[in-house]
Amino acid sequence: MEINTISSNAPTPPSTTPAVSTPAKPKETFPKQDTVTLSGAALAKSLKQSGMSAAQIAQRMHLDIKTVDQYLGIATNAVTTPTMPSTAAPQVKQAS
View 1 (tube, helix red, strand yellow):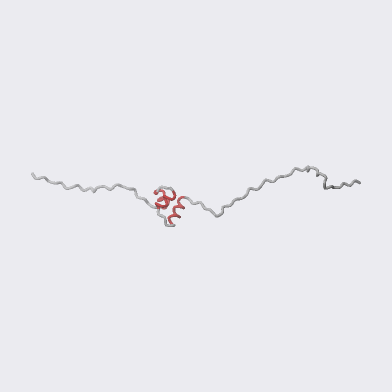
View 2 (cartoon, one colour):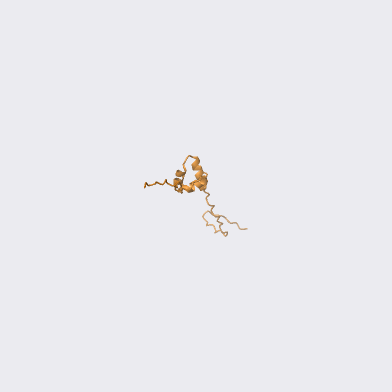
């Protein structure tokens, strides 16, 4: 019968099974606060409800005022040049 003793100074034989490395899990990142992305129309309506004018909203959103008007459902009338009344000027008779 053979007895093997383990000595603390004896080197340990190398392991024959390869070490299995597990991939590191990606660290999950969460926003500090809940976030919501609004469409342009929804943002314009929200700003309007907070008391801003259409011009202020257009400036803040870097949009044309006509676009903001469309978002808010504001009807814009086409600008027309005023026309002169169709009545003819009275004719002056010259004395003969």
